[in-house]
Amino acid sequence: VQLQACGGGLVQAGGSLKLSCKASGRTFSTHHEMGWFRQAPGKERENVAAITWYKSTYYADSVKGRFTISRDNAENTAYLQMNNLKPEDTGVYFCAVKQPGDMEELTFSTWYDSWGQGTEVTVSS
Image (cartoon, rainbow, N blue to C red; front, side, top):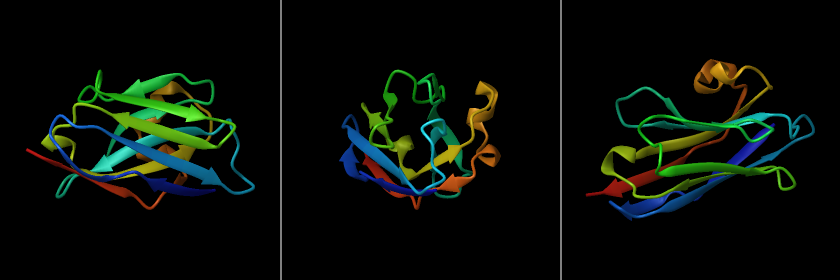
């Protein structure tokens, strides 16, 4: 599976960005679960949102009410709409896919087996 993420950029606090992640490859299935992770400078990679193939969603507490994950299975694309951005949202955002499993697996990067190249988000105060 190949993943191409885009949509990052520089935005002021309170602004919005929408990230996209397009999956391709013969082994990609609409049953794959998709997640967005971010890594801030000097910090570990953390899961911010994930979505199952049947569109159940998970959000980290720090982004609930501000971020929305969605997917278009016909386009093999996942999206992350980020509103009311804060400086602490700054980081490199990665999309990833995993095989279907328990909801508890969505937050752990070790369950994901394909990763995109990352797109940088910078939120200025």
